[in-house]
Image (cartoon, rainbow, N blue to C red):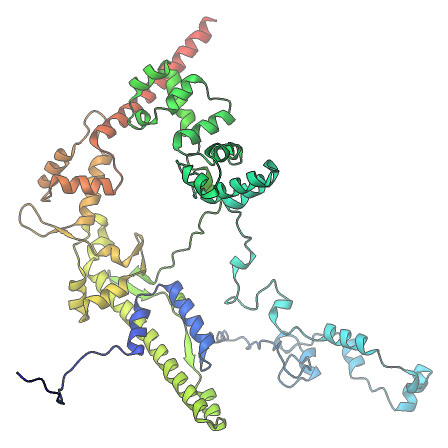
Length: 550
C-alpha cells in the first residue's frame, strides 16, 4: 500500500470551553469568602466595573428628608450644601434657626464703607498685614472640613468599610515565644544555633521529633551537643519540646513537684490508663484505690498539647449562603443571604464617555474587552445566585422531614435526584453544593450534608439514610446501661428489629467514625465512673464518722 499525502475536509461537533464559560463554572464552586476576593480583584482590574452602593433610605412619612452633608467637595470651599449659602448653615434640622437672634443680626450687619471701617478700627486697612504663608496654610487646613468621614470618626468611613480585624494585634506564635527565651538561656553562638534549629522542628502541639539523630547530622554536631540543649524543655509553657506524651507529662509533673516513683510508674504505663485497666495500674504503682484515683485526676488536669495555646489558626466565622425559615402556610421559605452576594454594576456612562475620547485602536479594543468581561461577570454572578437558590429549594423539598422532625427523618438523597428535578447536570449540582452552607431551624449545615447514602430496609420498604442510621446508633449507645453494654451484634439485631438491614462491619465503621469506643472499652469506662461515684459517698461518710469519734 502506497503512502501518499492528501487534504480532506471533515465536519464534526465538539464542546469548546470558552474563558467566560470556565469563569462561570469557577464561580459556582467558590465560597462566599473566595467569591468576595475574586470580585475585589476584578474591581481593581476592570475600570468599567463598580460596586453597587446601597441607596439612601426613604424618608419616613410625615418627616422632612434629611440631606447628608457632602464632606468631599473638590473645590475646597468647605460648603456643606450644594449651593454653599451661609443661610443653609444657619438653618438647623426642620428649618429652625440654629443661631441666637443676636448672632444672626450680627452676621447680617453691614460694616459700611472703607472710611467707616478705618474709623471703627482706628487704623488704616493698609496696616492690617496678611498672615504668613505657613500660618495661612495651617489655618486653612484647620478650618477646612474633613475630606473623609474617618477624620471625625473612629477609623472607618462607613459601616461597609468598618473592619474589626484592623484593630486586632498579631498573635504570638510558639516559635517566637521560645526564641525570646532562647536568647536569654544561651550565650554561646553554637548553642543558640542548635536551639533555634530545634525550635524550628517543634510542631504546633509543642513536640520535638522522637529521633534527633537526623538533626545532629544536618547541623554537623554530635548527638551529645544536640541533646545537651535539653534546657529547652524548661521553657514556658511547661511540657514543651518533649518527644512523646510520657515525657511531656513528666515535665509538667516535675514543675508541680509531683513526680514521685508512683507517679513515674503511672506515666510510664499510659497504655494501661487508656484501657482503663485500674487493677494493673494499682499493682504497678503500689497504691490503693483512693491514691490511684487521685493520681489519675492529676494526670487529667495536665495539658497534653502545651503548644496549642500559641499561634492557633484563627477561626473563620461560617456565614450561611441560604436561609430556611418556616412559612406561614406550614411550608418552608428559602431565600439567599444578600450579605454574601457581591453587588457590582457596569458603568455604561463611563464607557460612553471614553468611547468618544479614545482614538487609538488598541485603547478602543481594551475598553471593548473590559465592557464584555464586566457584562459577563454581572450575568455570571446573577446566574450563580439563581442556581444556588434553585438547588437549595429542591433540597428543602426533598428533605422536608428533616426540617420538620429532625435527623431521624433524613431521607437518602444523591446528586442525580436533585439534578433531574431541576433539569441540570450532576456536575453543576456538585459545584453548587461545594463550600455552601444553609441556616435552618435545626442549625447550620453544609449543603452536602443532605446528600447521604441509602441503607436498605429489612422489610423491603423505603430505604433509610446513612446519617439517620448513625443517629439511631448513637441514641442506642447513649441510652445503654453500665450493666448491659451493647455489642455491635446486639446493635445490629436492634436495628433490624427497627426495619434497618445493616451489616455488623457497617455498624463498626459508623461507630468508629463517630469516635465511639468498642463495647469492651465502654464497659470499662462506665464501670469506672460508676465505681468512682459509689466510692465518693462512702469516703465522705467515713470521714464524718472519724470526725464524730474525735
